[in-house]
Length: 154
Length: 299
Image (cartoon, rainbow over all chains, first blue to last red; front, side):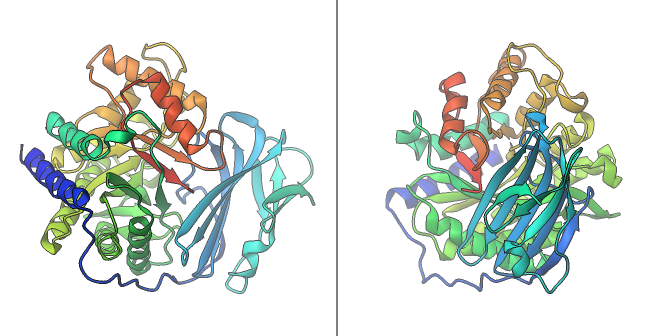
């Protein structure tokens, strides 16, 4: 009951604010949207994955951020068809305040895994438009071009 | 308690959103937390709160979801998460970040209102060494932090904000017994609505029986973690198959405890259905039972 009263009270306040179109008092004061860089690194199985298994059965991942933009790549197989190799690219623009999630299918390769990618502190910006080598369960390695978002033969 | 929570959610959604009940709502952005340090998360969350406020359309109440990663027991008496960059974040740090999001939303507010959600997941709870008791406390303290955030919002006079909890509960990530303890802990603490923005991975796509899903789960388990106590389903819908699976969950629940409906839909760009199509697909299979909320990772 306490929760009900609290929620109803909050809703009443919210409804009043919405109904009268009130804006917050005071001027907006944005803090810097830039964060500390994250050196390029591989993501192992202990690191949580944000992508649902319904989309991707993850094998491994890779992450880099220069503090203004961030790119994470997750490799594996399509959640609804394990024969399809799939990559999911998460991009965050911390300045513009945007986040995109892009799915790239490699065809009937089986599960993909990231085999080689830029690592370290010297590539925090350049690697975001570079390339990553991915290996299917069988067959030749493929290259993901982060600049174009396309996957093709190396 | 259940009736109270549902009444609040319905009032928050429907009363402020009358025109959107029968059409797909506009998507609102949800964020994955990648922090280089716990301290970084506060400024990160502030910026996301401000972004959310500036991009919010309409006068309704919307869900602002920050996904801090997997629930974790960090020490003998400390709970929190490990985020998507492998940074461990205590609940104290998460509360600081959520307060930052509340400040950002308030300072950039233009219209409408928001329910700020402390999001986590059931990713590899057992594999990290957590017991079912640990998971119960993770849910309990998650709800507690949502209540703390609500107290902060009230103290600051942020009248266009509320606070609750959410979890990406995926059958493939851990078993049903330990995952249910997150929901049970939240329910025992008693404050936060617990939005399940996970999947019904591997569940049957037709019928209404308690069929098998992935990883030892059954339809009834998905129903439990999404509708027991203060839990509310905000299901991930990426393909039509996902809408079919969740419809089976709803039908099973309504053939047993009853009263199941959806708090909205979670979606993403770039895979299968568009966000609008995802909401419409679930709604078409569950007419009048899907609230006008569309949380989107990547919109």
